[in-house]
Length: 276
Ligand SMILES: NC(=O)c1ccc[n+]([C@@H]2O[C@H](COP(=O)([O-])OP(=O)(O)OC[C@H]3O[C@@H](n4cnc5c(N)ncnc54)[C@H](OP(=O)(O)O)[C@@H]3O)[C@@H](O)[C@H]2O)c1
Image (cartoon, rainbow, N blue to C red; front, side):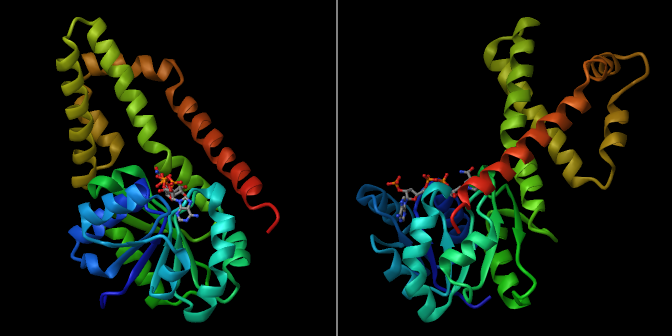
């Protein structure tokens, strides 16, 4: 992709993660603008990444080929409405990373003719290990889709969704997902200590085991259930632990948790998008 000028509206955590990935992926820092109201944050971003910063959102949009809306969902409506006149002039591609804000709301705030793609990243994007979902309405052409995908691939993997409603499921799986694995690792760490391991040892063993299992699953073509079976000798220790998880209803509990997260995402979309 020919280097485009990117403007981030909001220079917080997720914007920083994406900027880090883009620069490591070869985007020249001079092609990245960040509009951010907090002066010390602007200074930090300029010092860390060498990007151009400014405090005027509309001025950033007027210079951009691609605009990334990276403010909190609660302030996005006001920010988007104030950007509409600048967007109307050059109609850059807009990517919204805001959780729960639907395209119908975005279009009505930004302007119906502005091309908008929704993206849902997750926090491992900070390490280039993110998992993002993208959704574009049918009238967005292949070139604009490629541009959006290229940006998100700089922070990890990127998958396209066929329907916008799947964003709520994706939010429940990969958006919130890192926290589920942290919770499971915390629980394993505490149990390991109860079994007599030192705190540091328990911590290292649990984290490396999680990383190793995720890498084995990602880097082999073998299904998860087969990988699990290969660790589970009949009558052995793993079998005892797995039987205990099953008896405790682990699969049903995971499903219940994901449904609760998905339903909350739908609820938030409805309340944040009100008064379109
Ligand atoms: N973090 C995640 O795990 C994650 C995952 C997926 C999606 N997202 C989405 O990413 C977006 C940003 O989240 P975040 O965690 O990066 O939040 P954040 O760290 O609070 O970043 C938002 C930034 O926007 C700035 N801002 C506030 N009002 C603004 C305005 N009027 N114009 C320009 N900038 C303004 C904030 O400045 P002040 O601090 O001075 O207000 C802050 O620096 C959210 O919509 C969220 O849903 C986040």
